[in-house]
Image 1 (cartoon, rainbow, N blue to C red):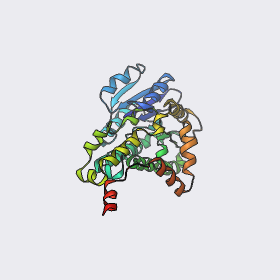
Image 2 (cartoon, one colour):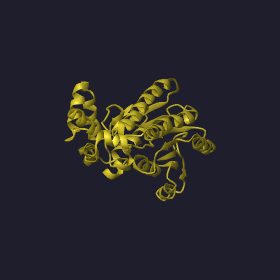
Image 3 (cartoon, rainbow, N blue to C red):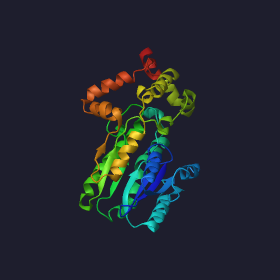
Image 4 (cartoon, one colour):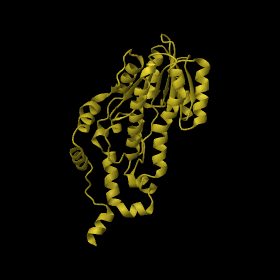
Length: 306
């Protein structure tokens, strides 16, 4: 994760972005730096400080920030407030994912995803809001997901966090109308970013993380089939170029009239969005076919025997 503050010379203010160690934020930081923004970027991984600094101009500043810690956010605000009293934009991009059925996912992982993907962005927004509403036509850009309006199996934690961020963004946009603050939402599908690599890398990794009662309840055969379904999802195979998201982010930051919602790529606009408008029972049927396992859960098999 990385947060970036970007100062655009023609604007009477600056832009702060979070979540740029890799992926969308990383690409956006580089692109906007080339276009004349002064970038103040914060990263989650310490090693990312040096690696990102090398890719940005000398006027850029890169530092570490954990958006789940209020003391880090306070320190970031102090740094920015010393450089400027006005922000042109805040881009909330930091995110993590945990894949797996609800019964397989620990409460610790559930909370971690929500802390980063939702509460962290809420905390950043609330902290920097005074600098944003200090001028007209500032904007907040929140990177959500198709998972924010269409729930995917084995994605309960991630989808819940994105649904929350979508709702928060809609509420914020309506509340900020008197201030002229624009709020945009980015809803990408599967993109070729490191977040696709999150979670267990092998079935053995997944199996080792589960409690004994979960293993007994679901059984190794069903769990392995479920893991294979997650890892071999065709939408992963045809994940799109993340620069499609970066271009939408640039538009949201720089255009005088940014869109309320952006759906970059064919997956978001031609697959997920149309499916989300179908009757619920049809959506359930589609996903039941995609998620169908050749094995029943061990507990179900035992009930049939009894």
